Length: 383
Image (cartoon, rainbow, N blue to C red):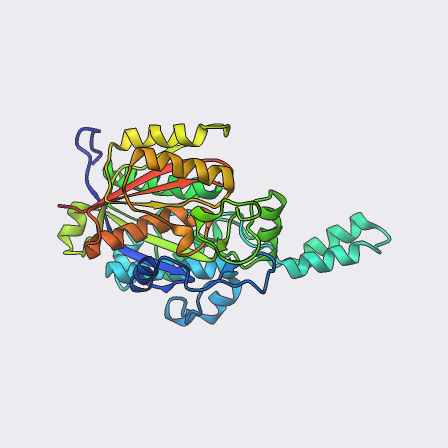
């Protein structure tokens, strides 16, 4: 039964699945938070651009069939693995009926290109007698059935359904950092309004790819050299994004549903605020101030999804210093690197874990896209 806006249900986090350079699982990410810096930075493979790599995973634990593993690219394996961790955390991994009724919301990019095929086609195209015919033939014959020019974004949701049996309705959001915010906003509002009782929501991102590094460097967004803390990338040549391979999923439930099955509750997810103003001088600060005012919160801790891009990051930090003076601020980029669509789910999952551990009673996550889009997400203790 649908609720009115005056009678909205509490939405709680009952499952968390995390994978990043910090490792896998909640404990590894709480350790990364305590350390305040990434556990691993690869400065060699894609020099001069550093990346924070995914950890070694025993894929069989969450993706039992080798055939399933083989047909997925890295971003899908990370996401399906993290989704399995979230289901385990929520205690519903073996409950087929529960998962069949669960809805799924995923945020992700356009998927991975097959760079080996790209390179072979481009090399052959140079000497082709009929370039058009050559291109058509090889695009038809060389690409796997799971690819067009890149993997379909909604394949992540499809593979979670296949591997884990989460077969309720699914939605896929695209649009870099803002898509992660919208995935959480959609899931939270639908549960709060009474449309659905349980939802699995999250995202995954593989940073260890030449194609994404080229795309971001073309925009002038990447940092060169070694790791440096996000809010200290201010000097000439210091600014920029360090991408990180990451996946984060949360299981969200109506509080009464969670209580009825005696589930462990990590934290409460409050309504999610988002904005997408045209980028101009001062727009980030104005947007965050508006969203913060709507949230009306004084958190114990702020988790920032700041990118490290110079002007945007400086404006976000200046706005936070005004909005919440004296409140500790932790940048996700200092723990896992930046992971675009995963930023909001990752921040929410980490916040829920910290609240459950008693580190804070209320945490606010901010996301400011490297190109566009702002979000404010709040989690609090249930009582």
